[in-house]
Structures are given as structure tokens and as C-alpha cells.
Image (cartoon, rainbow, N blue to C red; front, side, top):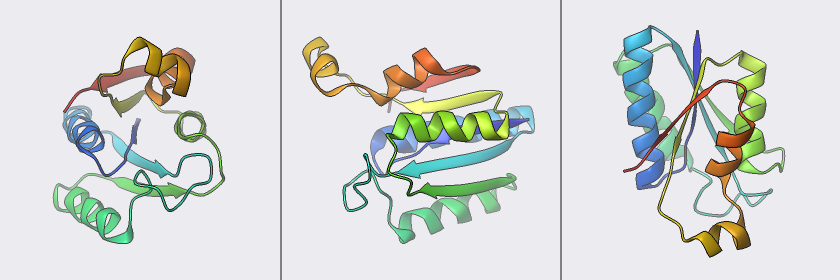
Length: 129
């Protein structure tokens, strides 16, 4: 059994990882952490640096959680990356962090969380920081 978590170095991303760790420990599941830039932007704040990924890897290792950390560089939208990895590994659960957005903000800029919630073929756990 595998859990996929969408991770960005932010309060939302850390909340998602914390919830995914709890679920992985509870279920005895493998955890696959997915980080990506926004549509090929690998210099933006959502693209984690090596220090963040190493710290995350160390945390998961110390907790004894079977895991892998994937930093995607295919230029896809973050939601597409998360959904693609979830399909590839046969995820039983996807965990994502969410933040409050106005209805207009959702229409104008789109929403990774909304796309994952609508398009996932498995359960999705959305958490707030």
C-alpha cells in the first residue's frame, strides 16, 4: 500500500507531509513524496531545494517509514505530476495541503488541490496548516 503526498516548502506542504506520515505509520504504508515546479519553473518557491529534501528524507528515515522522494522536472502542472505518480504507484491515498483562496482566485489562477480532488482515482486527504 502506498500514499502519495504533494510537497512544497510551505506551511501547507509541511502540514501535508505531517498528515501523510501519520497515515503511513497508521497503515504501514510506503510514502512517496512528490515535489515539482510550476509548469517547468524550477526557480520558484514551490520547487524545494536540496536542503529541504534532505531534511525530509532524514525525517522519514528516522521514523522508519519506507519512502522515496521525487522531484519532478517534466514541466507538467503540479496536480498532473501528483496524479501521474499516484497512478504509477497505485496509491491508496493522496495527501495535499490546502490554503484559503477566494472564489475569484480559484477561477483566475486554477487550483492544484481542486484538480487533485476532482481527478484522483483514489481517496484524497486535504489538510490545512
